[in-house]
Image 1 (cartoon, rainbow, N blue to C red):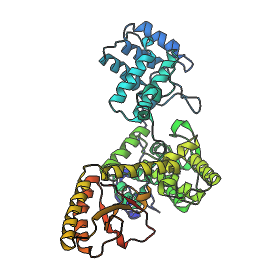
Image 2 (cartoon, helix red, strand yellow):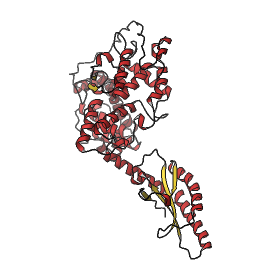
Image 3 (tube, rainbow, N blue to C red):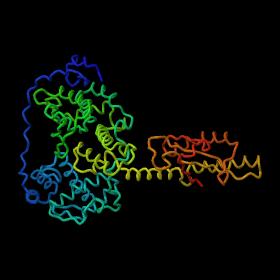
Image 4 (cartoon, rainbow, N blue to C red):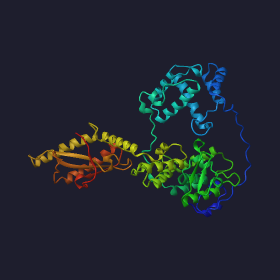
Length: 498
């Protein structure tokens, strides 16, 4: 953390350092801006069918105009959670999905005149077109969800119940809800403490948002909407505004570091509004500033392999470990008994503000899914290494010919030699982390598997030539060992290269 004494040296409150014990100056008074006038929509009770009928009557033969009229006069109710309308971001997804539906149909010379003409046949045709374009499972599922609900507003009953029912390959629509690789900063070697001074130098609010994400599992919008003094209930932090789906929650305050971060946030809060952002900025503006700072400092998936949301993962995994007694599955933890795991997942679910236990697997992973993923990845590695006619296979066969030629010249009656390669270590059992070097072992033996003495020198020469070849073929660093020197209990999986 930066020196607290530097707080009084900068005139711009957004450039003040975020540090333990710092006394932060009050933000200067700014004249409040007049509220931006907003369009008044029809009452929430207005039905979708009424809005569709109005749209068709006002803009007959114009599906684009009908969409505009419909979304102008109909508030989309939330499908889950408390009774409310969806956010502007969610509404945008509906508009985009239905617009893309009509555009894709038009590209195939299917031009509808009015929205009620849309049919299930149109939906299936468009979904399969998007599938052919190799859209991600997430995009396919989101678009289907929005369009299927819109069809319900049109009064059309669909026989297809999920995105998989509309695709030629149902697996293309299966989203991965369970984490299989760690996303927490501390598990991928990124240190928040080291990066915070750089973030503080750009924006002190962004720095405290990151600290709140790690200590309380807050989303960025929740931190930007926080009123630290009002939300601090002593033994827990009450999250109300900015929560996804409007679902509030109470996050326990259990550690000294949580208390320290919250006290700093209270000192930084605006003296009148109590908000943890400049008084002249909206939540959206504060979030936009935050991500601009993240890009400038280099806290991105592309540059560091992490995102701000990874701190929420770090918090979730810490809570899981504290209540389960073992690390989360995604971090390599052993499986606790079923009831212990359920209790741990319940606490994680409540602290993160989700409504379903299954959602926590997106943070902690599940042992069954990780095992399937690791086995699948192991087979992918084997497929690359064992590819018929591949570089590795050709190298092994050519090396065997050379070894046998030399060996028979010295001993004409000697048994034929083989060069054998093995994947070793945890990855031989499908458990190795993908970011570690690929571990192989090599041996020279006869067909019965008996090692041939006196081949240490050629073996080392083969290893020197083989390492870059494997790295080129797999895209991974490779460490190759003499199989004769390995412990007897190390897992080994022989490669079939003939």
